[in-house]
Amino acid sequence: MFRIPALITVLLLSGPLLADSAIEVQQAWIRESPPTSRVLAGYMTIINTGAIPAEITAVSSPDFSRAELHRTRIEDGVASMVPIDSITVPAGGRVELEPGGMHLMLFDPGRVLQSGDRVRLEVTQSDGASVTVEAPVIRDSGGSDSHHHHAH
Ligand SMILES: [Cu+2]
View 1: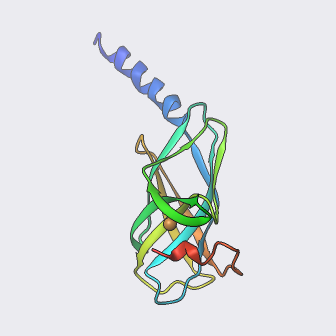
View 2: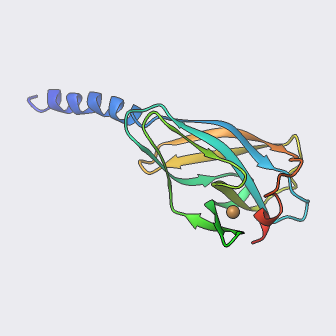
C-alpha cells in the first residue's frame, strides 16, 4: 500500500513534462513535381509552444517510402543539399522549412501527386511524441531555387 501514492505522483508529474515540448506544425505543403519525379520537396513551419527545446528527428508519410530532413548549403555561389539528423526548435520559438533553406526531402511517392492532393506527414520528436498534419500539394510558380532543389 505504501508505494502506490508515490507511483501516482510520478504519473501525474510525467504529463506536464511531456506537454512542455508540445509542437505545432503549420503551413505544411509539398511542391508539385513532374509525374516521373522520385523526389519531392516539402515545407512547413514548426512552432514550439513548450518551455523546453524540441528536437525534430524524423518525418514520415504513408505516401512516400522515406523522408529526410535537409538543409541547403551555398558554397562559392553553388547551392547543394545536405541531410541533417535533427532540427531543434527553441522553447517558445519556431523554425521555418522553406524553399532555399531547410526542407523535407520525400522519396519514392506511392502515387502521382498533383496540385490539390493532400498528403499526411508525421513529424516525430526525439522524445517519441509526434504530430500528424495534412499537407496540400501546391504548384509553385517557381522561385529562383526551384530547379537546383531537385538535383539529387
Ligand atoms: Cu533536399
